[in-house]
Image (cartoon, rainbow, N blue to C red; front, side, top):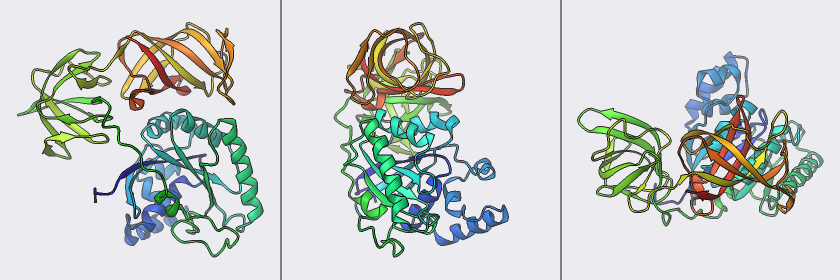
Amino acid sequence: MADKPHQNLAIIGHVDHGKSTLVGRLLFETGSVPEHIIEQHREEAASKGKSGFEFAYVMDNLAEERERGVTIDIAHQRFDTEKYYFTIVDTPGHRDFVKNMITGASQADHAILVVAADDGVAPQTREHVFLARTLGIEELIIAVNKMDVVDYSEDSYKQVKEEVQQLLNQVRFNSDDAGFIPISAFEGDNISEPSENMPWFDGPTVLESLNNLPEPSPPTDAPLRVPIQDVYTISGIGTVPVGRVETGVLKTGDNVRFMPSDAGGEVKTIEMHHEEVPEAGPGDNVGFNVRGVGKDDIRRGDVCGPADDPPSVAKTFTAQIVVMQHPSVITAGYTPVIHAHTAQVACTFESLDQKLDPASGEVAEETPDFIKAGDAAVVTLRPQKPLSIEPSSEIAELGSFAIRDMGQTIAAGKVLEVNE
């Protein structure tokens, strides 16, 4: 199975536009979810008065999500096309879940944007496209969903397509790269087979478009970086940090350092899915034991890298951010929390360096007095405690972050430069 190249795929778009149903349908059509499971879900959905939610249930397997009919966590599911095997990073559409959307999208290579034909571009459609652009998603496939609701009307499709194209132009997403496909995730139109209900559309199906995506280049040439999610003590082994290898290769016998805690040693064992392995590469979730590193020496948010080229620790860093929402304005001195990889650190806006025109990316104003919702800017941030972060041009996986305050995502950004 693993001889196919791997792609991470984010499914983004406004709440209730049918993301989960599309995901369930994709898993079903590629044989990743057997018929009888769908049947079970169908009965359960009907018993709760939510007929039609059976495909969505495949993904939303948290009880709470079913009761609410909302996607909360990012579920990881796998399916195969002829050419690739995909992991779906299903991203929630509700506004309070944008934080998950950011951590989800920052792991994705490409995305399917789901827009409902009967509703068009909605607030979250806008926000997700903005984020996808900021977080470096390369190709966007746009699925105009719920075509069954508008009687498979070509006019409705064209209207939504035009709205989305305007939105893509606003955020400088190259809309030539964006393939538009009219679909019904619920009925299965244009998912794996061309739809007889839309003879006016002669483009590829969703699965064909996924097959045609460019291959992502694996980030193995970058130095090793493993952001730590948790640190466990396991009897018989000792201290076991757990994390996902973002770049590079982790091998037993390597000398590694954890920053900003500044502890390190030799990698004794690496475990993946409860089996010992000699090495792990990008995308692998691992637990590993390092000689001489104890439970209190390292913590969540640390990043592990080679001892001779350790992860950088920022005294300050410059970043390009996009402000999505803020009740008033942001000025120098503002101190929200930055979520970068597995770290959460309060950071102060030391200076606002440039305000950018979001449409062109040109500098609109040098050293602005303030920035507000909808603005793009270059800013200098000072972490209140040590934070390991990398320029996005060097290690993109550790260069994107979200800014959170008052329980919501204020902005998303990518690191331009780190002052160590």
